[in-house]
Length: 79
Image (cartoon, rainbow, N blue to C red; front, top):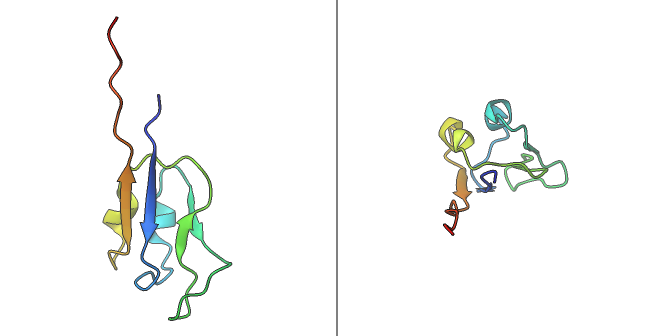
């Protein structure tokens, strides 16, 4: 079973630098063209399923605007 995750982006901190987009190995992050922050940026967001919660986006973000959440790994039940 693949690991699943999600991210939360603080739109008040995101400057649309696109570093998270370039760093995402799953290619599931994009700038949200439907939203403009009070600072005038299109913030990053998940645009499709496939996030594994690896955390690379949060590590690379210079503004610390991304929080990563990963679903707990379920252990297989033994018979």
